[in-house]
Length: 165
Image (cartoon, rainbow, N blue to C red; front, side):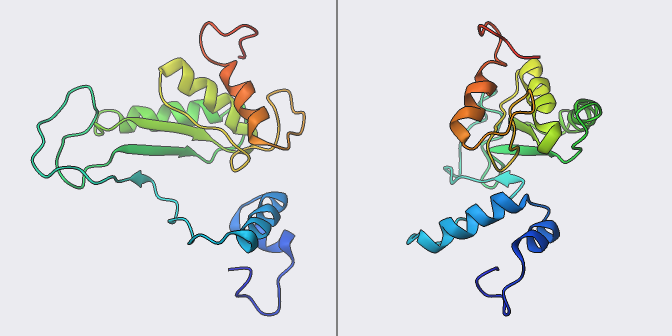
């Protein structure tokens, strides 16, 4: 999108239009100019993987076994207020769980990322964290790599020394 635009838009303005942080967009553009591989698939809410056509339902897998059923559902909480994001996540989960058999991966954005991660851990749900989601540690300190974010996220797991939240 950026490379195709003429004249080149200001990165901050384009990032704002896309709802992304300008540093993340700049990093993506820089990475895209060095990548040789084809573009990644567009981000979707349902991740599908090929399966055999006639598979019996495995009650522990979270899928019906029918072709086209989602492997998992990505529940992305866009409420960035750290005080209200967990409640938003719980409301969404309460609506999804009765109707979805696939595992639900829960994650948040910006200042809501860490509280939503804690909600996912409390509910025993899969979650994710990375610079795409948040650019700071739980204490507000800026982070510059995914490794640091993942280290903090691992502290949120039950039984972790120095447990978060």
